[in-house]
Amino acid sequence: MITRRDLLVALGAAAAAPEGFALAAQPAAMGSAVFDWNSIPVKPTAVGSVRSFFSTPTATLENLELHVTSLDPGKMPHPPHRHPNEEMVIVQKGTVEALENGEWKRVGPGSVIFNASNQLHGLRNAGAEQAVYHVINWKTAATPAPLPQ
Image 1 (cartoon, rainbow, N blue to C red):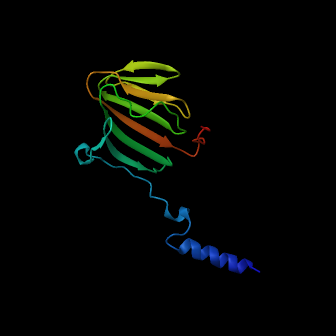
Image 2: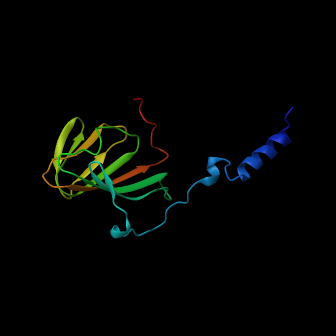
Image 3: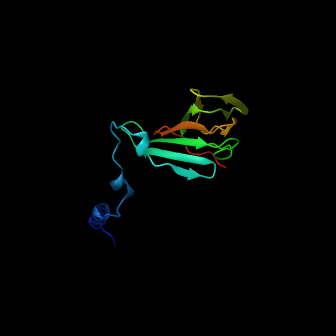
């Protein structure tokens, strides 16, 4: 028979172990920081390239992620999809088409695209040159669960 004392000892040992509870190994919240464009490695993809700046908790967000995609003419990074986190895309260079509310909308440099939680969206390069855009994703305690596929 397991006693209350045995249970408390076992829980304490599990929490103290390096592979203990996942909660014991939460990453620290990112503070103020500066990221030099030239220090972020460029990783080639099948449709262009990506620079991943960070993906980490902050003081107010469960996760904040930033990457910059360079997308070859006529390409899509992936098929239209949905996800529970909200996302903002800022077009730096080129012409893209964004699927929003069932309609493809063409935009250029300086344009901002907001992808709402669990809403179908997509993006494709509609121009003759490589498009470059910044993607900012965030997740909070209010972020809903993914919709069933």
